[in-house]
Length: 77
Image 1: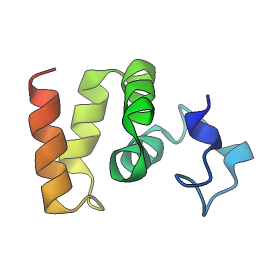
Image 2: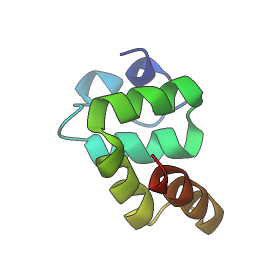
Image 3: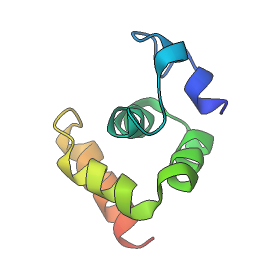
Image 4: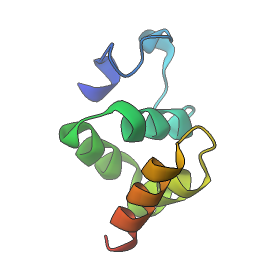
């Protein structure tokens, strides 16, 4: 779970209390906004393409370009 340990992704939260299931949407949004390719692969492996695509389409804190990119990317996955 190297991704969950990254300060660059979760600088403002206590990473020790970050639960993969309880905070799934939050984790996915952060990875889509600030993660690298390995983080995205981890998130897809952890939650599945459908869940990541759903979060990308509905996340209010993703800018419109990012939402369009991730929605298009996961539409073909």
